[in-house]
Length: 331
Image (tube, rainbow, N blue to C red; front, top):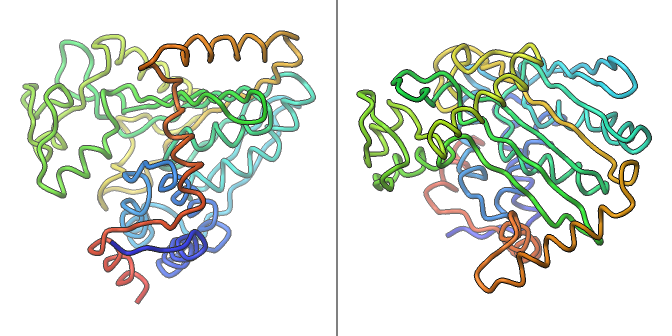
Protein backbone atom coordinates (compact mmCIF):
# COMPACT_ATOMS: atom_id res chain seq x y z
CA UNK A 1 0.00 0.00 0.00
CA UNK A 2 1.20 3.49 -0.82
CA UNK A 3 0.71 5.90 2.05
CA UNK A 4 0.25 9.64 1.51
CA UNK A 5 -0.31 12.51 3.91
CA UNK A 6 -3.61 14.35 3.62
CA UNK A 7 -1.84 17.22 1.83
CA UNK A 8 0.01 14.89 -0.55
CA UNK A 9 -3.19 13.02 -1.37
CA UNK A 10 -5.05 16.24 -2.17
CA UNK A 11 -2.19 17.50 -4.32
CA UNK A 12 -2.05 14.19 -6.19
CA UNK A 13 -5.77 14.35 -6.97
CA UNK A 14 -5.66 18.01 -8.07
CA UNK A 15 -2.51 17.59 -10.17
CA UNK A 16 -3.82 14.44 -11.87
CA UNK A 17 -7.07 16.12 -12.84
CA UNK A 18 -5.23 19.19 -14.12
CA UNK A 19 -2.78 17.07 -16.10
CA UNK A 20 -5.72 15.47 -17.86
CA UNK A 21 -7.43 18.69 -18.84
CA UNK A 22 -9.26 20.19 -15.85
CA UNK A 23 -8.77 23.80 -14.84
CA UNK A 24 -7.63 24.11 -11.22
CA UNK A 25 -10.91 25.77 -10.20
CA UNK A 26 -12.74 22.68 -11.50
CA UNK A 27 -10.22 20.15 -10.19
CA UNK A 28 -10.01 21.35 -6.57
CA UNK A 29 -13.68 20.91 -5.54
CA UNK A 30 -13.71 17.38 -6.99
CA UNK A 31 -10.37 16.54 -5.37
CA UNK A 32 -11.75 17.63 -1.98
CA UNK A 33 -14.67 15.24 -2.54
CA UNK A 34 -12.27 12.41 -3.41
CA UNK A 35 -10.26 12.94 -0.21
CA UNK A 36 -13.43 13.17 1.86
CA UNK A 37 -14.63 9.85 0.43
CA UNK A 38 -11.30 8.24 1.33
CA UNK A 39 -11.50 9.59 4.87
CA UNK A 40 -15.08 8.35 5.25
CA UNK A 41 -13.94 4.88 4.17
CA UNK A 42 -15.94 5.03 0.92
CA UNK A 43 -13.08 3.81 -1.29
CA UNK A 44 -15.34 3.22 -4.30
CA UNK A 45 -15.79 6.99 -4.62
CA UNK A 46 -12.23 7.96 -3.70
CA UNK A 47 -9.02 7.42 -5.67
CA UNK A 48 -10.61 4.35 -7.24
CA UNK A 49 -12.70 6.71 -9.38
CA UNK A 50 -9.90 9.13 -10.31
CA UNK A 51 -8.81 7.24 -13.49
CA UNK A 52 -12.42 7.30 -14.70
CA UNK A 53 -12.63 11.06 -14.13
CA UNK A 54 -9.44 11.43 -16.19
CA UNK A 55 -10.81 9.18 -18.93
CA UNK A 56 -13.90 11.34 -19.12
CA UNK A 57 -11.79 14.50 -19.33
CA UNK A 58 -9.80 13.01 -22.21
CA UNK A 59 -12.86 11.87 -24.20
CA UNK A 60 -14.71 15.10 -23.31
CA UNK A 61 -17.52 13.33 -21.53
CA UNK A 62 -16.87 15.97 -18.88
CA UNK A 63 -15.65 19.47 -19.73
CA UNK A 64 -12.43 20.36 -17.92
CA UNK A 65 -12.73 24.04 -18.87
CA UNK A 66 -16.38 24.31 -17.79
CA UNK A 67 -17.59 27.64 -16.47
CA UNK A 68 -20.75 27.05 -14.39
CA UNK A 69 -23.28 29.88 -14.30
CA UNK A 70 -25.59 30.69 -11.39
CA UNK A 71 -29.08 32.09 -11.86
CA UNK A 72 -31.04 33.52 -8.94
CA UNK A 73 -34.64 32.61 -9.78
CA UNK A 74 -35.84 34.28 -6.57
CA UNK A 75 -34.44 34.94 -3.10
CA UNK A 76 -35.09 31.28 -2.18
CA UNK A 77 -34.58 29.47 -5.50
CA UNK A 78 -31.30 29.13 -7.37
CA UNK A 79 -30.14 27.23 -10.42
CA UNK A 80 -26.65 26.48 -11.68
CA UNK A 81 -25.84 25.38 -15.22
CA UNK A 82 -22.79 23.16 -14.69
CA UNK A 83 -21.77 23.57 -18.36
CA UNK A 84 -21.19 19.79 -18.58
CA UNK A 85 -18.36 20.12 -16.08
CA UNK A 86 -17.75 18.42 -12.75
CA UNK A 87 -20.77 18.57 -10.44
CA UNK A 88 -18.66 19.47 -7.42
CA UNK A 89 -17.75 22.97 -8.61
CA UNK A 90 -21.31 23.73 -9.72
CA UNK A 91 -22.71 22.58 -6.37
CA UNK A 92 -20.12 24.62 -4.46
CA UNK A 93 -21.05 27.68 -6.49
CA UNK A 94 -24.74 27.16 -5.76
CA UNK A 95 -24.14 26.67 -2.04
CA UNK A 96 -22.72 30.18 -1.83
CA UNK A 97 -26.29 31.40 -2.35
CA UNK A 98 -28.30 28.46 -0.98
CA UNK A 99 -26.86 28.52 2.55
CA UNK A 100 -27.27 32.23 3.42
CA UNK A 101 -30.69 32.22 1.77
CA UNK A 102 -31.88 29.31 3.95
CA UNK A 103 -30.50 30.91 7.10
CA UNK A 104 -32.36 34.14 6.40
CA UNK A 105 -35.60 32.84 4.89
CA UNK A 106 -36.01 29.48 6.63
CA UNK A 107 -35.86 27.38 3.45
CA UNK A 108 -34.10 27.57 0.09
CA UNK A 109 -33.56 25.38 -2.96
CA UNK A 110 -30.83 24.73 -5.52
CA UNK A 111 -31.12 23.03 -8.90
CA UNK A 112 -28.07 21.85 -10.86
CA UNK A 113 -28.42 21.10 -14.58
CA UNK A 114 -26.08 19.90 -17.37
CA UNK A 115 -24.16 18.19 -14.60
CA UNK A 116 -22.20 14.99 -13.97
CA UNK A 117 -21.58 12.33 -11.34
CA UNK A 118 -21.51 14.14 -7.98
CA UNK A 119 -19.66 11.36 -6.15
CA UNK A 120 -20.84 10.78 -2.58
CA UNK A 121 -24.13 12.67 -2.32
CA UNK A 122 -23.84 12.73 1.48
CA UNK A 123 -20.64 14.76 1.14
CA UNK A 124 -22.63 17.66 -0.26
CA UNK A 125 -25.50 17.43 2.23
CA UNK A 126 -22.94 17.22 5.03
CA UNK A 127 -21.37 20.47 3.83
CA UNK A 128 -24.78 22.16 3.99
CA UNK A 129 -25.62 20.67 7.39
CA UNK A 130 -22.35 21.99 8.87
CA UNK A 131 -24.01 25.40 8.66
CA UNK A 132 -26.61 24.27 11.24
CA UNK A 133 -29.15 23.55 8.53
CA UNK A 134 -31.25 20.53 7.58
CA UNK A 135 -29.88 19.38 4.23
CA UNK A 136 -31.75 17.33 1.64
CA UNK A 137 -30.24 16.33 -1.68
CA UNK A 138 -30.85 14.00 -4.59
CA UNK A 139 -29.20 13.19 -7.90
CA UNK A 140 -30.16 11.10 -10.90
CA UNK A 141 -27.86 8.73 -12.75
CA UNK A 142 -27.79 6.73 -16.00
CA UNK A 143 -30.66 4.21 -16.07
CA UNK A 144 -29.82 0.94 -14.32
CA UNK A 145 -33.01 -0.11 -12.46
CA UNK A 146 -35.96 -1.72 -14.24
CA UNK A 147 -39.55 -1.25 -13.06
CA UNK A 148 -41.26 -4.12 -11.28
CA UNK A 149 -42.11 -6.72 -13.93
CA UNK A 150 -39.72 -5.24 -16.51
CA UNK A 151 -36.14 -6.01 -17.56
CA UNK A 152 -35.17 -2.71 -19.23
CA UNK A 153 -33.72 -0.02 -16.95
CA UNK A 154 -35.70 3.21 -16.63
CA UNK A 155 -34.18 5.04 -13.64
CA UNK A 156 -30.68 5.14 -12.20
CA UNK A 157 -29.44 4.21 -8.74
CA UNK A 158 -30.64 7.74 -7.91
CA UNK A 159 -29.55 8.36 -4.31
CA UNK A 160 -31.22 10.66 -1.84
CA UNK A 161 -29.55 12.13 1.22
CA UNK A 162 -30.39 14.04 4.38
CA UNK A 163 -27.86 15.45 6.85
CA UNK A 164 -28.64 16.86 10.29
CA UNK A 165 -26.52 19.11 12.52
CA UNK A 166 -26.98 18.87 16.28
CA UNK A 167 -24.99 20.01 19.30
CA UNK A 168 -21.78 21.07 17.61
CA UNK A 169 -21.51 18.62 14.73
CA UNK A 170 -23.25 16.80 11.90
CA UNK A 171 -24.81 13.85 13.73
CA UNK A 172 -27.00 12.15 11.08
CA UNK A 173 -26.24 11.43 7.42
CA UNK A 174 -28.83 9.40 5.55
CA UNK A 175 -27.39 8.59 2.13
CA UNK A 176 -29.00 5.76 0.24
CA UNK A 177 -29.61 4.79 -3.35
CA UNK A 178 -32.72 3.35 -4.93
CA UNK A 179 -30.74 0.17 -5.58
CA UNK A 180 -29.60 -2.36 -2.99
CA UNK A 181 -26.03 -1.05 -3.43
CA UNK A 182 -24.34 1.70 -5.42
CA UNK A 183 -23.35 0.60 -8.92
CA UNK A 184 -19.74 1.56 -8.19
CA UNK A 185 -19.61 -1.29 -5.64
CA UNK A 186 -20.33 -3.75 -8.45
CA UNK A 187 -17.76 -2.05 -10.72
CA UNK A 188 -15.08 -2.51 -8.04
CA UNK A 189 -15.86 -6.23 -7.83
CA UNK A 190 -15.98 -6.63 -11.61
CA UNK A 191 -12.43 -5.29 -11.83
CA UNK A 192 -11.16 -7.61 -9.10
CA UNK A 193 -13.08 -10.65 -10.38
CA UNK A 194 -14.91 -10.94 -7.06
CA UNK A 195 -18.47 -12.26 -7.02
CA UNK A 196 -21.29 -10.09 -5.76
CA UNK A 197 -23.77 -11.22 -3.11
CA UNK A 198 -27.11 -12.62 -4.19
CA UNK A 199 -29.84 -10.02 -4.45
CA UNK A 200 -27.63 -7.19 -5.71
CA UNK A 201 -28.34 -7.34 -9.43
CA UNK A 202 -29.86 -9.04 -12.46
CA UNK A 203 -28.33 -10.06 -15.77
CA UNK A 204 -29.60 -8.83 -19.18
CA UNK A 205 -32.13 -11.68 -19.13
CA UNK A 206 -33.72 -10.38 -15.94
CA UNK A 207 -32.41 -13.30 -13.86
CA UNK A 208 -30.49 -12.81 -10.62
CA UNK A 209 -26.70 -13.06 -10.92
CA UNK A 210 -23.63 -13.09 -8.69
CA UNK A 211 -21.27 -12.35 -11.60
CA UNK A 212 -20.30 -8.68 -11.34
CA UNK A 213 -19.44 -8.40 -15.06
CA UNK A 214 -22.82 -9.84 -16.05
CA UNK A 215 -24.54 -7.53 -13.57
CA UNK A 216 -23.00 -4.48 -15.24
CA UNK A 217 -24.69 -5.54 -18.49
CA UNK A 218 -28.04 -6.01 -16.76
CA UNK A 219 -29.90 -4.06 -14.09
CA UNK A 220 -29.50 -3.23 -10.42
CA UNK A 221 -31.88 -4.70 -7.87
CA UNK A 222 -34.07 -1.99 -6.34
CA UNK A 223 -33.99 -1.77 -2.58
CA UNK A 224 -37.32 -2.94 -1.15
CA UNK A 225 -38.65 -4.12 -4.52
CA UNK A 226 -41.27 -1.79 -6.00
CA UNK A 227 -40.62 0.73 -3.22
CA UNK A 228 -37.03 1.14 -4.39
CA UNK A 229 -38.14 1.82 -7.94
CA UNK A 230 -40.65 4.36 -6.61
CA UNK A 231 -37.88 6.10 -4.70
CA UNK A 232 -35.73 6.15 -7.83
CA UNK A 233 -38.61 7.66 -9.82
CA UNK A 234 -39.11 10.33 -7.14
CA UNK A 235 -35.45 11.32 -7.45
CA UNK A 236 -35.64 11.22 -11.27
CA UNK A 237 -38.49 13.74 -11.21
CA UNK A 238 -36.71 16.05 -8.76
CA UNK A 239 -33.22 15.82 -10.26
CA UNK A 240 -33.95 15.56 -13.98
CA UNK A 241 -37.49 16.68 -14.79
CA UNK A 242 -37.44 19.64 -12.38
CA UNK A 243 -33.90 20.81 -13.25
CA UNK A 244 -34.20 20.33 -17.01
CA UNK A 245 -31.43 17.71 -17.02
CA UNK A 246 -31.16 14.47 -18.96
CA UNK A 247 -33.30 11.56 -17.80
CA UNK A 248 -31.45 8.40 -16.82
CA UNK A 249 -32.60 6.79 -20.10
CA UNK A 250 -31.00 9.72 -21.97
CA UNK A 251 -27.75 9.98 -20.00
CA UNK A 252 -24.50 8.35 -21.07
CA UNK A 253 -22.72 5.98 -18.67
CA UNK A 254 -20.64 7.24 -15.76
CA UNK A 255 -18.35 4.21 -16.14
CA UNK A 256 -17.00 4.25 -19.73
CA UNK A 257 -15.97 6.59 -22.57
CA UNK A 258 -19.02 5.98 -24.76
CA UNK A 259 -21.42 8.81 -25.52
CA UNK A 260 -21.22 12.51 -24.83
CA UNK A 261 -21.65 14.33 -21.49
CA UNK A 262 -24.25 12.57 -19.29
CA UNK A 263 -25.97 15.88 -18.48
CA UNK A 264 -27.58 14.58 -15.29
CA UNK A 265 -28.83 16.81 -12.48
CA UNK A 266 -28.97 17.41 -8.74
CA UNK A 267 -31.46 19.13 -6.46
CA UNK A 268 -30.87 20.41 -2.92
CA UNK A 269 -33.09 21.88 -0.22
CA UNK A 270 -31.69 23.64 2.84
CA UNK A 271 -33.86 24.36 5.88
CA UNK A 272 -33.15 26.47 8.95
CA UNK A 273 -34.86 24.53 11.78
CA UNK A 274 -34.72 27.56 14.10
CA UNK A 275 -37.29 29.29 11.89
CA UNK A 276 -39.78 26.45 12.34
CA UNK A 277 -39.28 24.98 15.82
CA UNK A 278 -37.70 25.86 19.15
CA UNK A 279 -37.55 22.19 20.15
CA UNK A 280 -35.82 20.77 17.07
CA UNK A 281 -32.42 20.23 18.70
CA UNK A 282 -33.91 18.54 21.76
CA UNK A 283 -36.07 16.21 19.68
CA UNK A 284 -33.14 15.23 17.42
CA UNK A 285 -31.08 14.47 20.51
CA UNK A 286 -33.91 12.34 21.90
CA UNK A 287 -34.07 10.33 18.66
CA UNK A 288 -30.29 9.82 18.68
CA UNK A 289 -30.33 8.66 22.29
CA UNK A 290 -33.19 6.24 21.63
CA UNK A 291 -31.07 4.60 18.91
CA UNK A 292 -27.72 4.65 20.69
CA UNK A 293 -29.23 3.23 23.88
CA UNK A 294 -29.68 -0.07 22.04
CA UNK A 295 -26.51 -2.16 22.12
CA UNK A 296 -26.20 -3.10 18.44
CA UNK A 297 -28.01 -0.14 16.90
CA UNK A 298 -26.32 2.86 15.32
CA UNK A 299 -27.44 6.22 13.99
CA UNK A 300 -27.46 6.43 10.17
CA UNK A 301 -24.17 7.90 9.02
CA UNK A 302 -22.44 7.50 12.39
CA UNK A 303 -20.00 4.93 11.03
CA UNK A 304 -18.77 7.17 8.24
CA UNK A 305 -18.73 10.20 10.57
CA UNK A 306 -16.56 8.36 13.12
CA UNK A 307 -14.36 6.88 10.39
CA UNK A 308 -13.79 10.38 9.03
CA UNK A 309 -12.83 11.74 12.45
CA UNK A 310 -10.25 8.96 12.81
CA UNK A 311 -8.85 9.13 9.28
CA UNK A 312 -8.64 12.91 8.90
CA UNK A 313 -5.50 12.89 11.07
CA UNK A 314 -3.95 9.83 9.42
CA UNK A 315 -2.28 9.01 6.13
CA UNK A 316 -4.36 7.85 3.18
CA UNK A 317 -3.55 4.38 1.85
CA UNK A 318 -3.80 3.58 -1.86
CA UNK A 319 -3.24 0.17 -3.41
CA UNK A 320 0.11 0.08 -5.23
CA UNK A 321 -1.47 -0.92 -8.55
CA UNK A 322 -3.94 1.96 -8.39
CA UNK A 323 -1.24 4.42 -7.28
CA UNK A 324 0.99 3.40 -10.20
CA UNK A 325 -1.92 3.90 -12.60
CA UNK A 326 -2.58 7.38 -11.19
CA UNK A 327 1.11 8.29 -11.49
CA UNK A 328 1.07 7.16 -15.13
CA UNK A 329 -1.81 9.57 -15.74
CA UNK A 330 0.48 12.42 -14.65
CA UNK A 331 3.07 11.74 -17.38
